[in-house]
Amino acid sequence: MVKPLKIMIAANYFKTLDPVNKNAFSIFKAYKSKSNTFIETGCHFGGSLTHAINGGYKNLYSCDINKVRVDHCLSELSSKCDVLRIDHSSSLDFFKKLLPIIDTDATFWLDAHDEGGGVPTFDELALIKELFADKASTIIIDDIPLYFNNTIPELIAKIKEINKDYNIRMEYIHSNKSNYILVASTKSREQMAKFSINKKINS
Ligand SMILES: C[S@@+](CC[C@H](N)C(=O)[O-])C[C@H]1O[C@@H](n2cnc3c(N)ncnc32)[C@H](O)[C@@H]1O
Image (cartoon, rainbow, N blue to C red):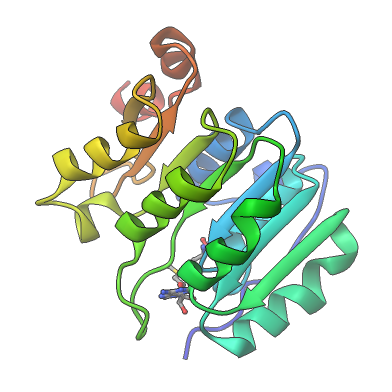
């Protein structure tokens, strides 16, 4: 069984992280939505929610098919932000309920997969297109080589159905490039390059 991570909200949070988590945290912080809203699928034991809160997000929404994990995150993090809603449900049911009622921008972290829940990312993107009003919100997808190695062009095409002006970057959060995340943003390519963690890895 995976042990719950120690949840920590601290001014020196960045310094406490290992390199992989430093990279993930840096990306969440760089792409923080104007409304400080973070929408995740798959909360697990709250590692990414903790990054988001430490990075300045105030309104957090997530879900998981595992109730123990949902309850753990709610009890550990509810007092640490303004809004925390975590549904015990599949990401698709969660998106059907949540997306129509959010009228701000958001930063999406699509990270629900496996453990009986499949890989619902393509359907999550379809629901963002259909139900989420803001078409310029950043969308970040985890574990690209693990789940999308053969479907990266289709994944990008699906994102561009939401907004053809999205720019796409792969960011290597593991220094040996064994894993990477996809960032889709309506920021300029130049701005995205400034936010990149890859330059630290390549140098
Ligand atoms: C990789 S973990 C998420 C890690 C978490 N986002 C973090 O960074 O700390 C994936 C989680 O997604 C959940 N999950 C799998 N399929 C799902 C689905 N279809 N809907 C919602 N949650 C799902 C699993 O129970 C697991 O806790």
